[in-house]
Image (cartoon, rainbow, N blue to C red; front, side):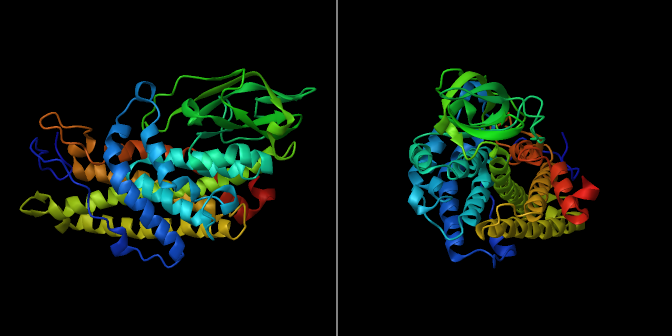
Length: 421
């Protein structure tokens, strides 16, 4: 197999070390508060020490056989990383800009493992911030343990026939009133953390509107399907959640009856900012690997980095990284200022961060040639440095609202609903 430069990929290349980080050299964050920057530094140290050594195992594991990376989840809990997103009265850090700090944390986790970032996102940004909108009793029973990492949270909106479309007519999971509360029936699909979850927030149709319910995974009638085997994000377990005559008390409803869609959309908007940050984290990792390769790899009598093709490509990617990071930070700042739907910035940020992750990961595979396409080299066990980024990045263009949906959101802001629909 030949590399993109025409030079043969050798079987004697040593195991590649973590590349030097380039963000600090090229990007000057004038938007984030000192508090947010300190959170970024703290999470980066955690990721360097604990996520990096586990990233290869997670990226090449089997969802069905290897299961949920409980060791990393428990380490995040011990480090207090789940506290970042929440107010002090709920057991969180009570930061002035929690969304900005949470997004920065997710970028740092995704730098090594998008699976870990996705677990964190669903646990905190989706399940956690949803529970934070509940009653004092709901927050005491569920949110406190979630923040401490004593339970795992999941969030269930997608279904076999409905994912991006969350209109009441598309959602087939139904909540029916009973004398004691509610009965849920339906099937949810692609539910992150489901195989390990203790509590699942479920969106269901109640009459002609949607409501949100807090469903313990151990409730009678709840069953979890086998974990999906996916192209990437091997540590982000997803599975079906089956609800068969699940009886819930009235206190299990989160928010007002018929108010579930507003809760879900506010959580998903926050989630899009988080996924944008994860995209930037992966893009930065691939970019850093490329920079190191261009500085050290010899071909045709000199460093690869002397070739103008790669110089111009890297300059373009550096510009796009600057823009994508600034966009997600801006969207998070709007959220911190009380705007529950910071659009079109959240949609723009998701498109920019996730499409860039895919593009730079593809560039990195091309630059590394045979080693870029390799998971592990048979000759000496050398680990391919970028193939996992390539596999993991693609899903970010799909989940938390496909990028095509994000373009529609932007068009609505530009043209108005009466034109864009």
